Image (cartoon, rainbow, N blue to C red; front, side, top):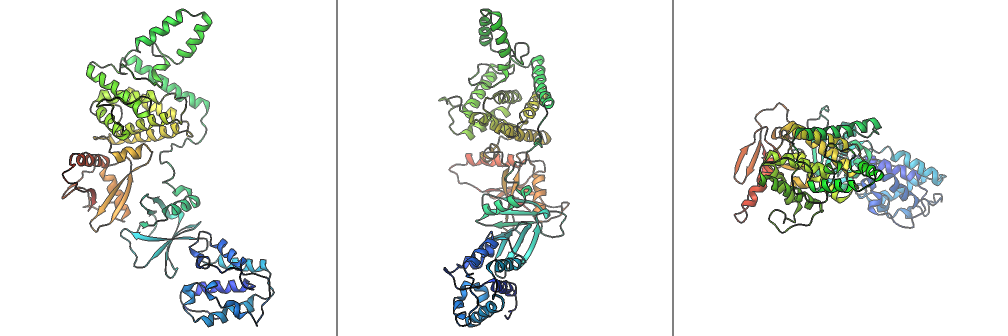
Length: 558
C-alpha cells in the first residue's frame, strides 16, 4: 500500500494497521465521523475497538466482491486524509491492504494487531479539547488542549502536530475558573520562557475532572488549601492536651477580671433548686452542671446559647457600648437562624451578607467590641450537638470571616481563640473541623499581615464563607486580563509578584506597580496596601454613586 507525504503519513500508517487486522465483510451500520476520527475522544482505544467489532465478520478476502465493500471510503478514512487522493485510489488501496494483511486472521488476532500499532500513536489515550489561547502567548492557528495520563499537550487542530508537551511533574499548578478559563503554570525550573498558559474553553469542567483524576495533587481548586496535616489519628493524650489548653485559657480569662459575672437569675435558680434535692440527685447535677466549671463560671457560660443575652461577656463601663454588644450577639443569632428578625434598623436586614458586613464594621471600630465579638463567636461554636448542622455552619462562617479581617487585640482572648480553633480542628471529617482549619489559617495570616482596615466586600464575604479564595482581575495595557486568586490579607506587593511570574518577568524587575483605577483616575498602590481593602472601598464608593453614573474600577499592571 502506497504511503503519502506530510502530516497524513502517521494516520495512514494507522489505517494500514487497521486494514491488516480487519477481515471485513461489510458493516451492519456505518461509523460516524466522530467514530472514525476519534482522536478527540476521551477513550480512543475503546472507540476504535467498537469500530473494529462492526467490520470484522470472519470471512476471507474475495477479489470479486471485495472492492465493492470499500465504496464508502468515508467509513474508513477521515476527511483530512481522504482529500489527499482520488476516491478510486483509496478504494483500491483499501482492497489491497485487506488482501495483503487480512487473510487467515481471526478476530482476536486482528484486534491485538490493531491495538499494538494504535498505542504507538503520540495522541493515543489523549482527550483533546478545543481551546482559545489567552494572555501574552497567542497562536495564529486553532489549537487543542490535550489531557493524558502522563501530562498536558498543546496540539495543532489542523495537522494534529504536538506543539508543546509537559508532564504533570513539570507543572506548578492548574487552575480552573468558573468563567471558562483554564490556567496552567509551569515550574520555575523549566527552561521554557513562557511559564503561564491561559485557555478559554467551554469544556473547562471536563478538563478539571481529567486533571484531578490523573494527578490529584494539581487539583488545587477541588481541595482546601488550609489543611493542617491532621490526617493522622491523634492520640488520646494529644486530644486531652488540646482540651486542657482550652480550659487553662478560660481560667486565665476568669482570673483576669475581664469577664462579667454569669447572669444572676440563672445562677440563683440553680442554687435554689439544689437546696431541695437529696444528696444523690445533688451529686448528679453537680456532675452535669459543674463539669469543667471554674469558680462561678460553669460550662454553660462558655457553650452554645440559643437565646439572646442581656449582658456582654466583657466588663464595659459604657452602657451604650454594652447595649451594642448585646445587639451584636442578637445579630449572630439572626445570622444563624436561631432568632427571628426584629423590625428595627439594626436587625431588619434580610440580606445575610449585609448583616455580616454590618456586624464586622461595627466591631472593627472599637477594640472592646472586637474582643467581645470573638468571645461571642467562640461561645456559639462550642459544643454544638450537630457539628454539620446549618446553624453550626453559619456560626463557623461568621467566625472564619472575622478571623480573615482582624484578630483579638487582647493577648488572653487571642490565646483562647487559638486554642479553641486548634481543639476543633482535630475533627477533619465534619464541617466544623474543616471550618476550624480554615479559620485557623485565616487567623495566622491576619496576625502575619496585621489585619485589615475595611470590613469585607460582598464578594469577599461570599468567598470566605464558602472557604474559597478571593479573586481579582488584573488588567494590562494591551487589553489582556489575568485572574488572580488571593487570601483576604494579601498585599499589593504579593499580587505584583504573582503577576510577574505569570507573564515571565524577573522577580527583581523594577519599575512595575499595581494601579488602582477608578474611572479616569488611577493611583499606584503602596506595597503594603491590601487588595481586599481596595475592593471594599470600591463597593462602598459605588453604593454612594447610585444614580450618578457608575465608573469602572479595576487593577492595572504597568
